[in-house]
Length: 613
Image (cartoon, rainbow, N blue to C red; front, side):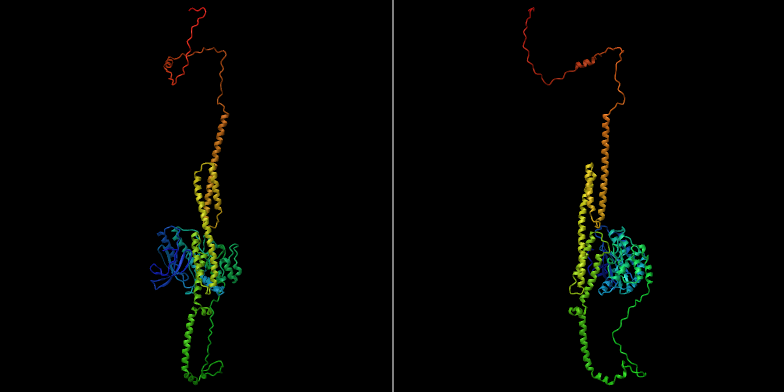
């Protein structure tokens, strides 16, 4: 079973709950009307929870126990203005709760109907509305439950008890969804509620008992004025524009002002405090006026036993004569025929009236076309679904949530387009269609922006990974300076990202990472510079030491003494061992032969005078 696809009609769950129709879809759940085929086919409301499929956390036994624990909290509530929670179960990895089905329209649907009739809720009605709901809010708070999602579409006027009923406990059901998506790890600071209706502190992840009272007050204002919260509050100046536009008593206006204070400690502390103030306004006469009948009453005068003057406007029994009775008997046949003709004519008229809503030419004049009523209901349901899509109960956290919202918005637009142009609600549907088409264009642009930013961010992350590795291997000043320039360039690109993007927290983390690497490079540069400076100073010292060398002791020069006797130098005799050693040394054999010089010619003996021959 694919949880992205709604359950089809005739689907049977737990072998006893048969799907009749889909009722709506919220931020993290779908609702269906089901019947119990095992218990006299009673109708119930089935809520299906939609887990986040991007989360790979396995739904283990501990999580299942916590899910059942949260469901049991709802089952223990016992109040006539709270739907009874009857069952909860898991099937095909989907999670469901079954609760009492409340017959009636929610207050957003009631407000839309009244606006079409050009009327709104009165001050007396809203005072009674507060009196009906404040004891219920107090009951929840006494049981340590804060609803956190009070709005017109979460309050139904029950036609069975003729009182408002509070539905869709966003706080507990959000906890169930967190258990499904995150196991038993608690998610702190979760934002629950609708923009405009929720108290300011809820968007900081905080919620108190009088946060519910704030949301109840905004809902009451919307019902009194027919305006959306964004038109009642100026988010820029925090000015409450409703104070001037609302036409209610001064005492009731003061109560609203205190309920809607921006800071929790300035509001009423509890629901009963508000109820006590409202009771001081006075008891209002809320009894409905009895309608005056249009039929005339024929007064019959008393009998002749009493004496009185005849009234010309009364019919007296004695005026009815026997002749008239006889005349009536004679004309009985004509009356029977006339009666039959009138009966036939009446049946024809009744048949025509019954078929009139389906005959376009007649129903348009009578303003009771069945087709108009059918598509009016479709329009109202589509409008409710559209409001849930535009103002989701769960905060949109990522691109997947946006894409899911985009699909839901496309379904709403499709439903508006399917309303034909020959029904009464067509013009109104076309106006709403333009609004939702513009919302879809804005959503498409936001998705494109998010996707583009995500791609750019991923490229920067890849470059940072490479730089991180290069930084760890760098070992000289030039390399560090180059890497520092690259880190600073990536940091500048990260600072250019819009702070409203889904990836903003990741961008902030990468900016911090780049700053850490830049600081690390600066530290390494300082170390290298200090080392280089120390080495240069050492070389300079050694050079200076060499140029200015001074011996540690003075040099003594030898001077012979003048009167000292001359000592004959004795030359040691050569050692015979050394002489013999030299004699035994053979000359190395030459490897070359000297050039032979030509021998001189023989000289003849020349006798000199006086020589003897």
